[in-house]
Length: 185
Image (cartoon, rainbow, N blue to C red; front, side, top):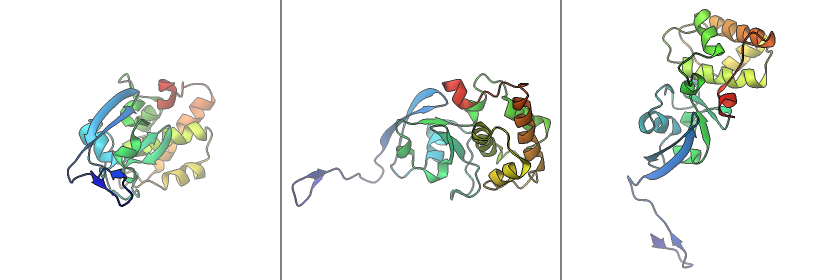
C-alpha cells in the first residue's frame, strides 16, 4: 500500500504476488492463482489443468490457443487470466463433456482432418463457434474462417471437408449439432 498526493490509498502489487481468479471452465466453476501478467492460455493449462488448449506463437497468429469466452471464439494467448474473472471459458475438453466425440470431432476423424494434432484443438473451437453463427457456409467461407489458423500438416482440405460435412448433416437433421454452448445452457 502507498499513499498518493491526494491522500488516496493505492494497492501496489509486489513482484510474484498472486491474484485469485474464479471462472467457469467447461461448465464447472474453477479457481486458481496467478500473477496479473499471466496469460489465460497458461492459466488454464498450468493452473486449471485444461491441457487441450495449446500454446503456439503467443502472438494471436497461429490459433492453437483458441477457446470460447462467453461463447465466442478468441485467442487465449491475447487475454490475461485476470480478465477472465467471473467469465465462462470453454476449451476443447468441453466439446466432449461425456467423453463422447461431438459431431464436429467425429467429422474430423472421418475426414482425417488432423495429423500431428497441435493445431486441432484451436481449429475445432473456431469451427464450433463459426458453425453456430453460420450454419450453412460455403467452401470459400470456411476457408476464409480457417485463414486465422496455421496448420502445417493437413493442407486444410480435409478440415474444410469435415466442416462442410457437419454443416450438411446438421442441415438435414442427421446430427444433433450440440455445441459447448448448448450443453451449458
